[in-house]
Image (cartoon, rainbow, N blue to C red; front, side, top):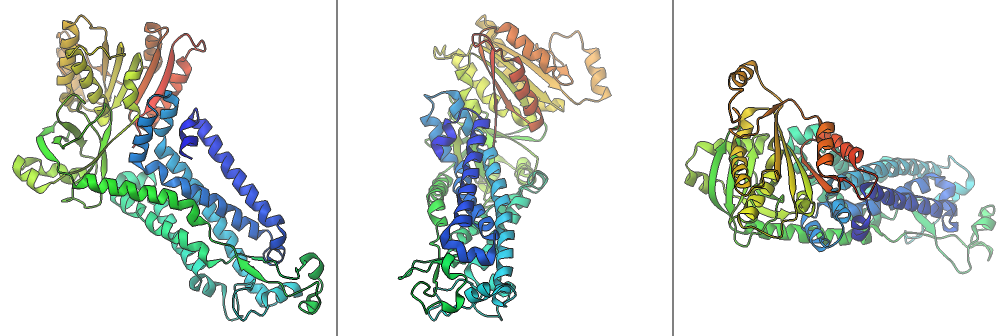
Length: 563
């Protein structure tokens, strides 16, 4: 499964292969239950609802096998490292892990709905057959004597057992209710509006997956769907179905016997469950390792910079870590891209106040550093790889950050500064275009120092053309506009202090891509974004539009950060 994931050449190919497997499983098991001789009598009572219940169950098994793999972050990082020698298209599939996780979840939700509705119909038909509302064959099958309570067909063994009673007293029924309720809570709390506004609700309800998988493993033990077993002499259903009174009296028609199928779901999910348990154990070990504060800085626009030190910690550009602060929440872990460079002896993150967790963290900004460190112990899990790791594999790179989305590119630009400082011969990248879009002027301030250092370094080395950066302010008021007009002739920008003046409004992406293609007529250009989905859609389309059909000319590859 992992190889099928990484070996597909594109996100579309991955979806096609995944959907093809789902369709195959559905059709195979649908016809298995709809045409199989062993289910002849079961189909007589239940009709096509039997196949409609069992085919989705097979698809559910396959997707429950997949659902945990995209969130095994350490496993993905290991695979990414193992495939570093392979093509970038293979590694890019790993950057779609959250999208694939959602896709699989949608299929689980859909198949659960079909499976549940079909079984509601099955229970009703079992009940009506027991009451004799259908034909004599259905009544006979439902009334078969079974002293050992093992060879029956109809799970409703008494006329006093109602469908509701069966659902809430049988193993299959109880676990089915628990699984369905857990899934409803998980899916509804994963909606964008809830996840962004009430992250804690999303976080805690998502951990109902433990209940979901426990119920899933037990669910099949109920063996509510039963098939005819082989007897000696054999019972020929086609011959005997019209000779009910002769069952057990003539050799050709012994009393039919039935048995539930062996539970198989656990065989599908046991592997991913073990992998996920190992994943969580590794996270716990990392959580227990000591993390020290090196420096704490409050930046403009409610941005908190934490510089941290951890023994044995190694990172690459553009990677991210998960942070946990037990004083705020024992269970919540939040992802943050590191803004430090691999060449530094610490790692740093910039945290913007956007939710309850970050607000509580930044509320302590006025405390003395020692008090802050004593109260807010920090757990760190990571680092984990992202698309930005591949930036130095491209001759030309376009880096696009929106707001705090500039953080992975801070790491990249810092690393470039160190590489130039140390005259690193391994640097393959020969040109970088950097775009930063912000709503307010204060957001530029914490990053301007780095850009000034890069400006100075490039000029001293006669490589002023290596880095082209453009800053865009998308929100301003009249007083700011007046201030800019007064200082329009200044040598440096009034907002950032840089030689490159700030642009107002949004970039004309057609113009920018056309310029990059013109300046790099035979290059492979990596376009990297850390920003909103709307901007990702725009940039991915531009990459396709401005990629030349001639393989010897400019090609654009789109990459997006995913958490």
